[in-house]
Length: 293
Image 1 (cartoon, rainbow, N blue to C red):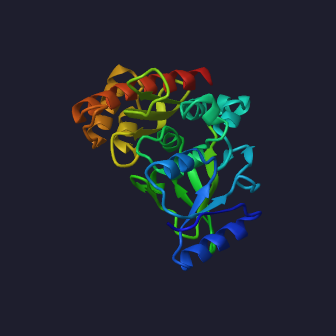
Image 2 (cartoon, one colour):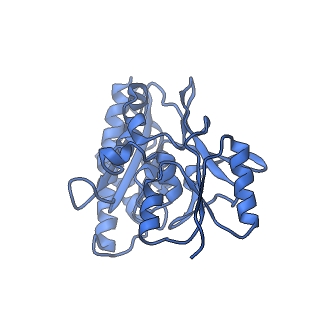
Image 3 (cartoon, helix red, strand yellow):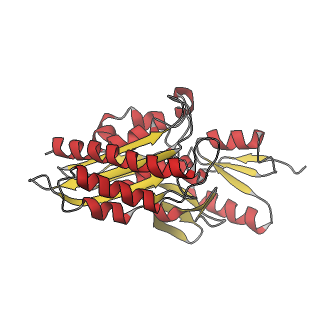
């Protein structure tokens, strides 16, 4: 068995340099933001040696900034901090509701949506909500910073677009307009503390007549990665987001899904339920957008 190590760098440059050095030596590094997934993995499915690189102390990963046009959420900010921020929950109720579904109250004291994204599970609750809200990843590496839409970040089950010398600094999300609303819903077999069988995030913009002018729909747990569903958005744009439009968007989500069958749900069930979630989340987002008029 190889050895384990723990480091807590004080700057972004120190983190990226360390990641590059470890990769160059043929060893393994793993970023720790909240650590709730990492620690479980170490005790169960993934016990290989590594250097844990703790980024919680970096100002860039611990910063929450609500600007005039966009919001920045650091990758290591605990979900509990986000959920308790009244300004953030007023702007992005669907996103904070998704964050509030990740684990128990105790887990949320450490778990972050940045870590949930980097863990890259198909069932990560924050990911469809981030996709729906048009979130962009801010990534640091030895060559500087780059940005990447959340829908392009996760590349497979447990895999993402980060290079060996890169890590996630945070997320930038465009602030909603006066008639914009978002929502996230998931289905689980139990009432709480479970992993999504299917999840759907929706964000809508309405004009003064209540007609949808822009939409984004993200779905999770029904494909190897969470997906942006442009055809669902197309079904909503130009409509009053009525039952017919929601049904068309639901059909688009069901068609986009490529789920598996397991003990928690069959392919047919997951395709059906993602459409149901689309209808319900879409109606909630519509009503929230109308209320912001």
